[in-house]
Image (cartoon, rainbow, N blue to C red; front, top):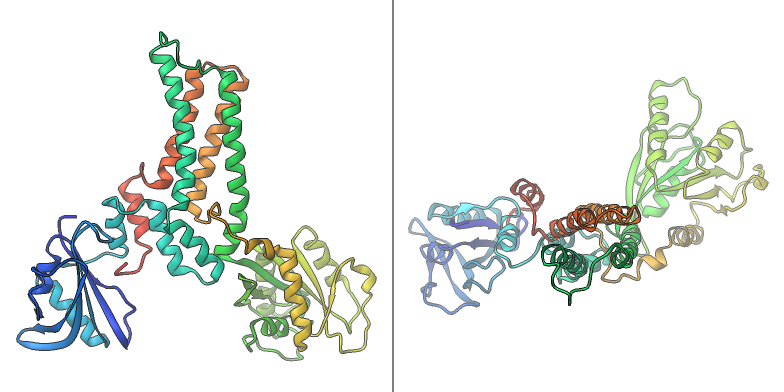
Length: 449
């Protein structure tokens, strides 16, 4: 990290303002070479200066240049940000001028990676930055901000310190048995400590299920026979005509997807091909896709036609979804009834063309998915998949330690599993990691971040 990097930090499109970010030991000198105005090498830190960018004796743009001296910067290096007009050509020309003067084009996420490697943030905060960028609801943004402010870090550090206290006491007992003042870490003493840690971890992991819903949404499949109104229902929930709607059975032959925000939670809606026996090859492929979607769906909206009698296809769908979280919708209530409603214990009777009915469906979705509790976010919601995987590994190690205690194995053997738990918790914060992992993590960031 001895070189100086540069990248466009804003979206590359014609707009009002663009920002080119430069970080590294030569950041100020490099920008100063193309800046017409104050000598940037002599200005105070955290100041903004008006001037012009001049490249090859040609004025490119009027700009505002922000100068930040290390170590009080995001990367803990000297940082310069050039605020120019937002045309694609002018932005690229200024970046090119900076690169010609000695900077290197930054890799995706390299600014954040440098912030992490220089100790400015830990790995949970680095990942929270990406979560903020990808947030698509107020709830997911709030959860990401908890991570950025270091609250996730403090939760993991608390677990880590409690585990470390166990390890230290055990190793003092082993290495210095003559110290009579130290508590003897027997299996009887260790057991309640490990049980408490497991209980607290389980509470975090339980909330993680809700956190995953906040972050990624709910995979929701709209399923039913052909021509029961699935596509109309999708369009009604999305408030747009995304799926083709006709009175011809089998119109939808492939899956149609869309997103809708209900109470702060995103439903990843999938309108599927109608399920029936058919000789049409294309429709048959669509039916097979529907069955695959159904397996992966976290919520199923099962649609029936109020004006048609139930048949074997309907009964098969009822059976296939009985173990799924589902909402039964009886659509087309404006038509004469023919369906036997006694087959359902709980259902919504509605018309996909009635706004009040759609609001009732949305209310039912919130109820079934427990959205009310989801929006009551607290700092213990950890939604990052990598962090949760490491936390689960730490829990497995502690569970193994508890099993060893119950078998009355020697304390030094128990300590091996406790040490493994401590290492896994350290990996969450990035204290124990490898370069390949870091490269993979930060490669998912956008350029200039």
